[in-house]
Image (tube, rainbow, N blue to C red; front, side, top):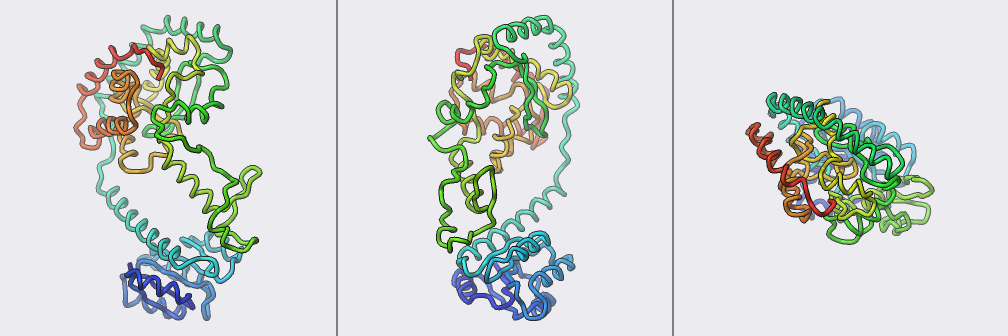
Length: 395
């Protein structure tokens, strides 16, 4: 990586970069930095002091952004002491990051420079891929089949659905159905018959630790505001390593909040599936075991939110955890009422690992990624779904 240091940068930063095989260029002021760009086009990151002779570092940043070829080069601004106005103005202007040299080690700066450079390279690849990729098109045969199949099924089952709705209302007060946000290829309102007691959502975090089919270890599911930030602990009492966030009655620095959030996502399973969920009612257990609770999703199919066959739409809290390529690949396929995962899961009596589910979701997505989809794929899955509808465990 080639780094341009501008201004009176701490010598430790430059030495650390050179010792770690970084190509270092220095400039005394903004004018000298601009002249360097006239003869070089290999600079990948700029690390500039705010206090420069003549114009300040933000002036240099704005001048660089006027050049189309330079406006995407990552820019890090340094100050000797934290300045609220400079900090605010920096991020309003679009500076990539801001550090205080008296409280930041050279390793942190160079690691951040590397991360920004890698992110910029990834963005270039993604932009190129977007330009070259074929626009996703929902197969017409699949859409026609979905509408005909869903409409016919709703018409035939409507009397039976009315009886089920009545039974739900008699056993447990509240609406017989619920609407929740789900994520497929888009976010939409997801319809389902209610199979749980009222207020069940409040118990989800506790049950996710105790009974989640995919959970690999016992771990926290929320940010611990009492844990001290190790970086802030090294600083004077009135200083923090990053801006403070005020969440409810708590105060936590931005770095420590996001670090814990990432830690939780890495330790916890991306998916939550409760085994023999105690929140389920008696009629709820019946409609779950027979998949009757899924029937309102036929309306989602008619609306175009879902397909009969696809990958299961996820709650937002699960979808936001799927950031890796191998996980997010599932969203290349439409959301579905049934699919490879449901057929295989129920065929195994609910015993399936998270890795197996990811593989099955990705396998169905491959039909769309590789343009190899055929209506017979869906028909085979539907035929396998019928004997898998009846099961013993409520998963």
